Image (cartoon, rainbow, N blue to C red; front, side):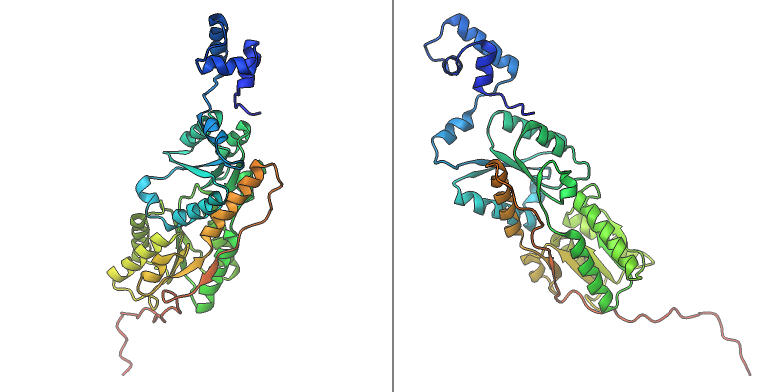
Length: 356
């Protein structure tokens, strides 16, 4: 049930016409003082919020909307992530076609994000919203559905719980392709520098990695969680390379961490790809600027954002949105991946008995 309070709701509570409510709440003449007081009391009781955005939209061309996007990420990190810059660019390309706007907000956590969506919807500041970084049993999904706010989940439909339209990439298939490629090159010991384990797509990738490695008879892969930053990616890479069971190949959950990883390999004197192969997720210009260039799981992030925006407008306009995933990421091999170097078995240092 929607909690979006309108002038008609206030009018019904105060027992007056919607026109009288408009006059009273905008401090215009035409209603008596007692009626004005009764209307304001009804508005306060119902939690009505002045609809400034609606007044602005009324002066704009038909079809104009405002789309909300809330990100629970630090501002400095967002500016460094090519993925979100491309994703937002894709959304904006569709908004520009419709003379619409994007309302972007950065928050601390999901609870604050829910509060922002509630405020935006009650104030009629947005016509719909995009949810990103979905978690399993994400509290935002039922909260947004209860508000009646048109929304699209940029994530697997299992994470949206059937309550919201979903647009997603097939992370499972992409992970399988990367692991099979590395196994074909001869790698048996893989590792992964992943993201936040609470995120749904991180969990999907982890399960896919473990399943395909077992299917191919590889050693159980090790996954280390991070916050997606370059610093965390470098720290995780050092931990993996300092371990006794050092991997011969590492898959990273974004491009920034992979760039940090190639720097750590050089710092430790490891040759890429002879001693260590690296694969990045989210192919970007960064992957082509490293030496050697980074192999990457490439997908059209701009197109993904555009598809999310088009799906949202379908939801807003009560059309049946298309179902199915966006294009699956495709592995682009470059200089950072290759067959592992042959390692000699450890020598036995015990003295050999004299046979003479």
